[in-house]
Image (cartoon, rainbow over all chains, first blue to last red; front, side, top):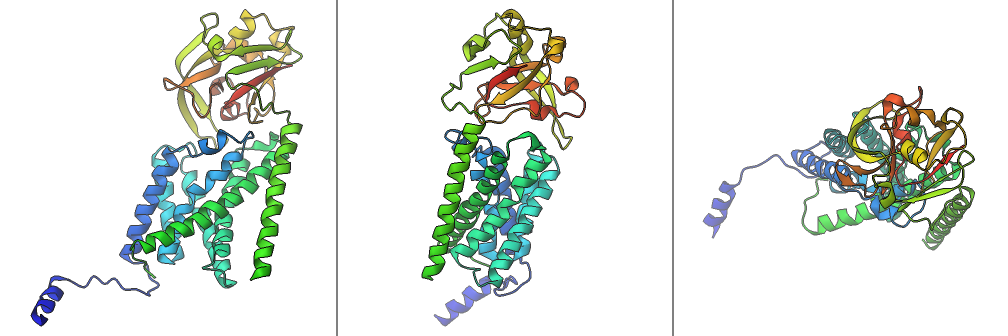
Length: 202
Length: 182
């Protein structure tokens, strides 16, 4: 029996993968790439806005599903607990969107990185006030991460000519979508992934 | 913990009420017709003889000038250029065939409105539709397929004839429902 154990050990090589380290590991890079590419493909090709357009009468309502662009960043943070992986994931996602021919060109990469920044900032603040692992903390961090893109796009689209109530509604929807999709749904997906056996790296 | 949940509840209710009343306010203020059929386009305003309503099927009839699979240059406000192939009906041909105008096009302006209260930034001179009837269209197909989530009708103006300082993407109005001519 002991010989058999030794044989098993010989068959495995040490990989250098360690838990409880702050550095980015290969597994972090792998997760970031896979999730970023998945997010890029889904963001570019699947018209989630249809879920809203069929029942909500006003322009800007599609912000209610805009959180699906950022949920990938909250999932990766749940698996790695390292803020740089949020940036790596969103960069990969932005690159994919650019390669799929996004009408905003290279700007879409910058938008993804700024979303990553605000989400990281949200998690940072929530951790400082002791809400880093709660639903409330994830919801507010998600809201912060997703909120930025709405005013950004409405401003660079120069939609000054639209009624102020449409602006306000779009911004509220962006924040709500961040709470519900990026924060709460992201946290739930992360929990299920961990429960399903996906190894965390923190 | 109980007071924390209470505050979360209060904030949620406040946000919900704000969204509801703002939506009601916007629908009333912007005069959004929630019951207008998506298959119908309305042309109205002081520049035409009387309000004119036309269905999608009528738009596709040979009575009007049809523009088929034409590539349109679109530029957005970030100055990104892209090209999209649309099929649709010439706006000018509808106005001409139906004899809708009360004045010469040089004296009139037009603006596109969508069902969701989006509208083109400002009214532009109707003479561009007259001078380039193939470049100001009401599109019903994109890349050979009927418009779906952005349709069934969408206004399209080629960037080459758009007034200086304007962006053609802002005049490419999805879910077009009304054209106002004044």
